[in-house]
Length: 102
Image: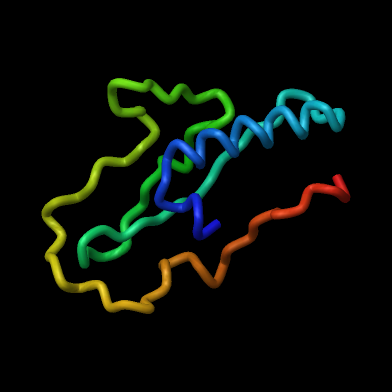
C-alpha cells in the first residue's frame, strides 16, 4: 500500500491487474475501488482517489489528468503535517497483498 498510495499510475495498474486476476478466478465483472490518501509538502493528508470510481474500468490518459484523481486542495495550510503522522484511515486499512487463497 505505501509504495503505490501516492502514485496514481501504480494504483491504476494494480486495479487492472486485480480485475484480470479475479476474472481468471471466475469472478464475473469484478469491481475495484480504493481509498488512497497522500500528503504533499507538509500539507495535511488528503484523499487522492475518488472511491466511487471503479478503477478497473477507469482510464488513465497519458497527457491529461485522470478524472478519478482528486485535485490537490491548495487552500489547506502548509506545515500542518508532522513526520510520522499516519494516514487518517491507516488503522482501518485492509489490503490483500497475496491473492493465492482466492
